Image (cartoon, rainbow, N blue to C red; front, top):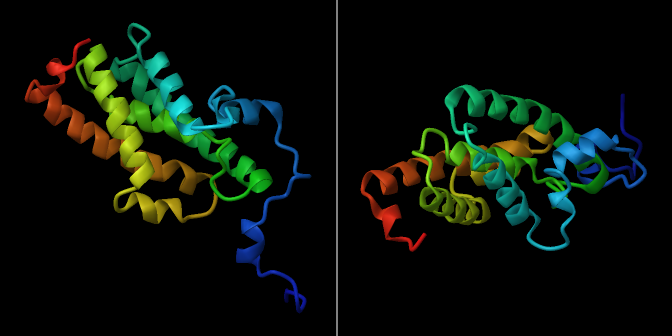
Length: 176
């Protein structure tokens, strides 16, 4: 099938938001991290805070809880984020489920403490914003999995740094 002259290519048309596209309410709720994505500023920060709040629920840190939660959020989040991208354009601010996943990965198997959680939050936010390699590469991918994967990378890097900080006892210098 050929593309008519003057029409955007398939790659270009994938970048264009379609405001008429309907995203079902459950997908909007999920993709937006319980509507944190609709906060008009710093939506990623609010999504990360929501994830941190859920993580602080007693027992959530247990591998049998957090691992399946991460798997479900990755799979359903990629689907829901893809729908939101179709409506709002590439990696829309309304999607914060990727920050939820990244925060949970940041805290995986980290001894649970408020100081370690705060350290993880700040490191994750910095890495999510600067997008070190290969996060930036994933960020350029279109679709829901591209939206999710840059935060997975930031979460893995954060997790490694937080484990080192906790191992060295540096998180205890925080007045928490």
